[in-house]
Image (cartoon, rainbow, N blue to C red; front, side, top):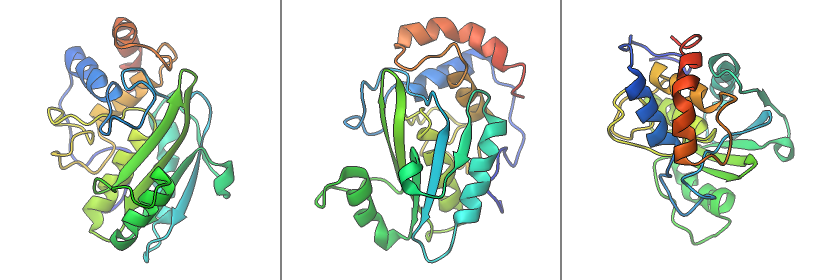
Length: 226
């Protein structure tokens, strides 16, 4: 696969309502790193424009690839508005692109603000949210360990930074599964993000509240996600 873009390289099956609602519940509730977030079993989403800023620290300049993927999100996720800003202080979602030797230092400084912290994972995103929605996200993406890992990290960490923070190994058609080999914004994940950004799904919702709303939300989403 030669680029990062909305869509996938191969056709996926039609998913049942049960599969899609189960995928939503598995990814939107819970956290891969549970100590980081306000109430992991509450809905997290942006309620205002997501203002991205890209900081390329890697030897290879990945800015154009990151901009292409970010630019595809407005058309792929109804209810989400994104833009790219030139100054980091104006951003509420910052993406750092680094080479592996830089990873630990950048995670410690930009994610934890702790020079002795561990730096878990191949790539990483942190989300700050409360009952009003996500206030900021910060992702660290590794550039120099192959095209697959770069694409995979860019897609997964960017999407997780929009709210579906949990990974689940049962989700075969999703990037929200560290065992899968997807490196694109899959159809399955487009359903999850479009359900999350539907106006009936509100930040701070509990599992039960979201589950009650999902059947009608999914009926709407099926009209524009194929």
